[in-house]
Image (spheres, rainbow, N blue to C red):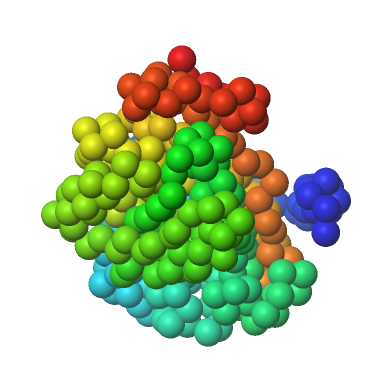
Length: 328
């Protein structure tokens, strides 16, 4: 389904439905976010979701009750909060953000409708059988397929052609899907003339050891897929990359805002703006499995030319022209 047709269908249908009567039973929505509650960016995303629901006639505290939990990239908290929300809240619908939280909610229920956001390649991960008609109790808004890791490696190589070894850095428990990014980057590696390795980290000590080890290789580079653990330590990671003069590409803009070299990823806000339309339809009776999983339409490429200069990298014209934003 084309995004234009999708928006037309959803908005048109929403306009045709009457607002929920005040006397009607209050619907309950459980939300499982993946960062800490102190993360201002994802608080803004959650606010966009709540505001979107209000525009469709669902006002928190009036005809809908929204309960939010923040797992802070802790798999144990993901499992605990998912079970608590399902068992205690008795929700009419769950919103699960990221793979780890979706997996936790799926383990907690096979009957409550689930809308997911920011989940990479849900078919490859086995959450849904196909995108067009997912069936079951799950649908939502996906991140790009794992093959985007090849794009990350390619952009690193374009920026610094001498790169010969690339490490994909991720937290294996809070970001279990990242092993697939490693595989995708390795599949693209021969054509790029690089070797790709996995660099799992579970602590800041592991991060330090990874940077120290790679700093001994003058042709090394790094890839950081989206992950709540590395996001929390964005400033530390960017400072380490600068200290050890290692070029890195990130899946989130926050790293570039901290002084990172470059970022390429889908728009993370988009799913939170669109999810209310699916929630609205499901609460009004549409089976979630009848709603197609949506792929991202907006991508953003940001290059920090100032950081490149400190690393001794002259950014090629082709990279500059491809960027949506260049930080001078």
